[in-house]
Image (cartoon, rainbow, N blue to C red; front, side, top):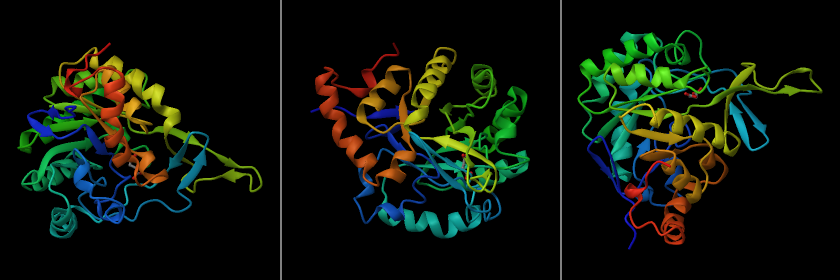
Length: 301
Ligand code: SIN
């Protein structure tokens, strides 16, 4: 019997598979396909203080080995999430929930954390300082070490659950931002968010996305994500959740060999709704081939 369990800042997960925020909604869309309690945790759609309609369409563009999205943090707002989405999610999901929180000001992050940290089933807070699809917030905090540290310090003052800061790959030196968050008190880090990209429709001679640019995700970014996770885990002591293009059990093991303690699976859920379930089922098979008994025993290479 293989042991898939991992622990993030004292929170034990049955396995390291967490659907990435924005690719799994609040879980409901996946229940016709399988019992989502097979997951380790679930990072719900990035939530802001007020509801947001998101960016104009088109906001998805297909690409080789992945896709661009420019969703723009569409979400019903934190009060609705607490009043409606979390009670509904509780009916179908018994595992620890990771609350993904976005903002346009430090005050907004703080308000969302103050509210969501009180939710019993929310055991981990993921602070998204890396959304590439909005102006005046999102990635602006994640591309500057001092701004990243300010958000981290502010949310840590009000959080009663472990705080993971979600980092952007759209920077020259992700390690300096990771270290700034660690020094400011982050309990852990999530990386990477999407890579800023663009496509042009040749016939229309216009960008495919109404917002012109969007975030690239999918298997094409896996080597970039792996490299960044490896660099960051070599420089910080806090746990790192690795993500970016993971679509197989072997990718999970590779990401853990780069130093990640758990992983998030994103774009793969949009291609194959069974992706997380299949990865979880395949993990023991790949562990057997690689003579790994406990996933948490995997050492950074
Ligand atoms: C979005 O809603 O635009 C995606 C969220 C993100 O990339 O952080």
